[in-house]
Amino acid sequence: MQGAIYPSLKDRTILVTGGGSGIGEAIVRQFVGQGSRVGFIDIDVKASERLLASLPAHASVHFEHADLRDINALRRAVAGVREALGPITILVNNAARDDRHAIEDVTPEYWDERIAVNLKHKFFAAQAVAPDMIQAGGGSIVNIGSVSWVIGQGNMLCYTTAKSAVQGLTRALARDLGPNNVRVNSILPGWIMTERQQDLWLTPVGEAELMQRQCLKRKLIPDDIARVVLFFAADDSGACTNQNYIVDGGWA
Image 1 (cartoon, one colour):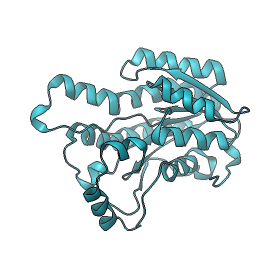
Image 2 (cartoon, one colour):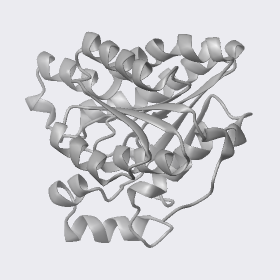
Image 3 (cartoon, helix red, strand yellow):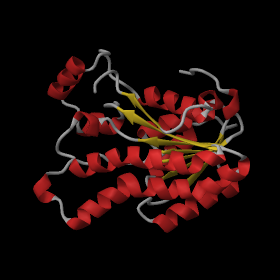
Image 4 (cartoon, one colour):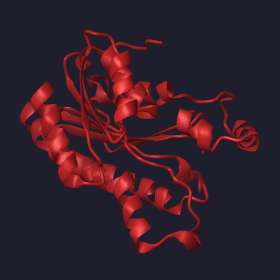
């Protein structure tokens, strides 16, 4: 369902990481609905191709396959989006994986891999697009965090550590890029009912607890996040930077 229209997003070049499914897919669809030129990066080729096939024929969309743990591959993918669609002035750092793990099972190698999946690429994506934004006279970076660390969710220590660091990264980038009119904000989703979440983690007990704790007594969906992303990407939020905005139905 189409929400608000933001004229400032029309014909802008957007980059969404992890755009092939879940929240990322909803973000891609919402930007397409704004008339933006949308590039997205994902490791899942099949999901990404399904998304491409489902979009309107007139949509200006470009997909780059990359494993974001490989920073050189990330840089090549960013360059591919730029070549296909033009200078990137909006970045949505969305990609992440919330795999569960016990403290005793975490090895140094697993720790490094989880940080690479959930945090490291966000900085290097911002680094890669910052020159485009500076040359254009401004831009917007939206980092997707998580409310999981705010509520102290268990069994995912590496994930919650990385997601808490997204707040620090957001504030540091906002400070350093602000003089160039580049805004940086983060959005902290609650439990969003993507296909992955429903298949892997949602149980009747978990759903009952969620409905008890949330102020809003409904399941949140990917579009609930995507529509907030649009606002922070658009010029309508032109005075907003250095902020971390929770979208969790009042769970935290």
